[in-house]
Amino acid sequence: MAIQRGRDLLLKLDEADTGTFVTVAGLRSRRLDFSTDTIDVTTGDSPERWRELLGGAGVRRARVSGAGVFRDDASDAAVRAVFFAGAIRPWRVVLPDFGTVEGPFLLASLEFSGEHDGEMSFELALESAGALTFTES
Image (tube, rainbow, N blue to C red; front, side):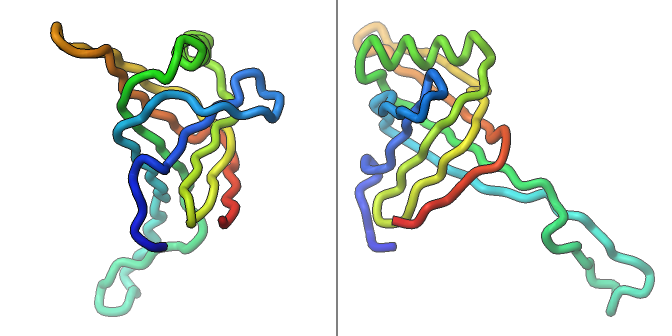
């Protein structure tokens, strides 16, 4: 993947679960993390007492986080509605020249903040809630 602008990473929401995604929020910072739990299968017979892990057995998960300002009233309302409903909805994360991650996420955290002489901003965190797909660009 070549050097790219961070602003090109997009976060999209399918609020009604209809297959129609809209870009939400003017994210100024974004992060996509993938992780897997490890299953330790080390025994007394492990070579030179080195830890051994069981491949492909751990729980996989993705976390998306970001901070910024809402694009408009509609995106603000959509994100708030999903959060307060506790709804798991399809989200799409677009990484240009790399690929797209798509699947069900729970909006696990939504924070608002603002300075007295600045704009209102927010931070959010999404936790994967099912199987995700990755499509290369």
